[in-house]
Image 1 (tube, rainbow, N blue to C red):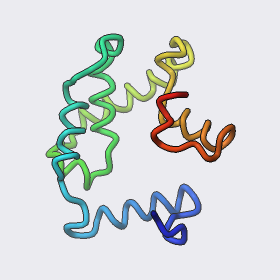
Image 2: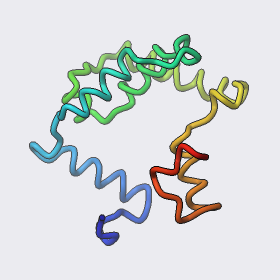
Image 3: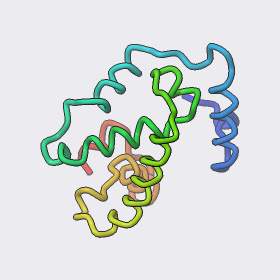
Length: 130
């Protein structure tokens, strides 16, 4: 599907690639799928067990996006938002180890690890079976 020579080899190379592409005029487009994701993150449908912390997740997800992507979604940057975001991330760093495993789980990361370590041939459609 993708020529592997185009894939950055390190995190820093990936970060540089994303920044370069996002700053290119008209490279990023606001599609209907992107809007669907924005609507889910901004308000729902949200699983019942996550509803109490969803405002935290939503705020943090939107406000950690690169500046160029925030502009596409119309998210304004303010000093107050930066202060709240930094506080939220610090609070998350302190409390995440104390949360039950269900809330600590980052499913896509778990699926990727599973695919790489235990079953390298695992296909995307099989992820729900893990």
